[in-house]
Every structure is written in C-alpha cells, then in structure tokens.
Length: 204
Image 1 (cartoon, rainbow, N blue to C red):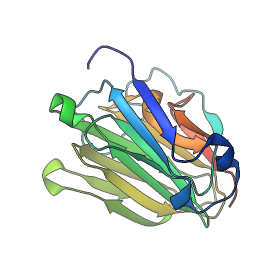
Image 2: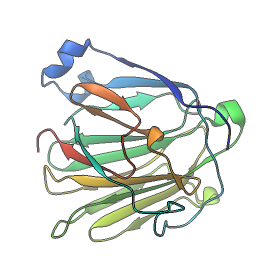
Image 3: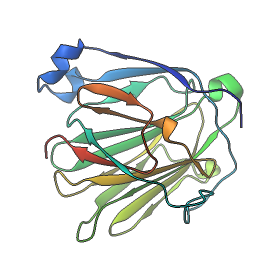
Image 4: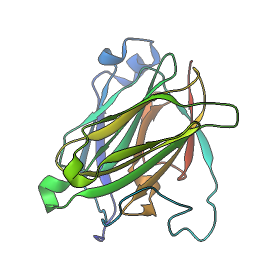
C-alpha cells in the first residue's frame, strides 16, 4: 500500500445553488477529479466477515440525492461511485489509478437491504474474465468483485423505491471509507464517515 492520503478536487457542472432545483440527472452531473491516491491489491472472490476489522464498525446513515450522477476520468484516481435514480434504480461503479502506477485495484463492493426487502434486476458492467470480475447476487444483497484498471467496472440493481441501502467497500480486502463517493444534500461527498455506510434516497 502506498503512503499518503487521498487528495480530491471536485467540480459540479452547475453552480451549487442550481443543484437544489430538481432537474434531469444528465443536466446535474458532477465531475470528480482525483490527483493522488493509495491502494492495495491482492484480493479475489467474495468478502466474508469484516476483512481485517477487529470489530463491527459503527454505521452512519446519509442522504443520497436522487437523480444526481458522478463522473471521473478513468485510470487517474481510485474510488467507488454510488448513484441513485427514481424508482429504486441504483448504479455503482469503480475506478483505479492504473495510468499513474501501472497496477489494478481489487474492489469488493457489497450492497444490502434490510429484512423484508429485496434486490432485483442485478447486472454487471465492464466485466473482464481475465481479471476474474464477477458478481454475487443474493435475495437481499449483491456483491461486485472486480479488478479495475484504466477503465470502469460496475453494477446496477433495483430496490423498492426509497429503500435505504447499506454499502460495504473493500479495497485489497480492507475497508477504507475514503474511497466512497456520492452526491447528498447538494454536495459531492468525497469519502464517507463510516464503512459500511447506509445511503437513504432523498426521494423515492
């Protein structure tokens, strides 16, 4: 694992005040630029337990703004980007700093819902068999296990509209909340207060 902290610069395509207005997601997307990051590799397959955490971490609940999208340049910085659209449609994708360091990022992202809720219509994006990229769907959870290089890997799934979803993010088998990105309360969140984190849509 490289030494150093993650430094990110984020800019929205619209002024901050404009984000308070409900507009189509294509018009309210935000660009995230990463100029340095650290990551570690060496994990494949499904995640079991807390992946090195000595105890179960505290979980924060945060708002994710419905209809907001994030984008970044592939191969420059590492991150897990989470988006939500009306009707229970979730999109999660991963990026890595491979263009800078020549290494891939081993991501495991687990999305889960509470008792009595379901995850449906699961699909994977950008999967490459040579990297062992795969997805592990369950009734109330789904896991994306990928090695991301200078491209994007991702998954889409559907929940009951407005359902809070818990996201567990592992990089190289270790939790690291600094790599979780989403738009909430009209701001780009660059790093989460906890990993896992519960994201609750601003509107169903």
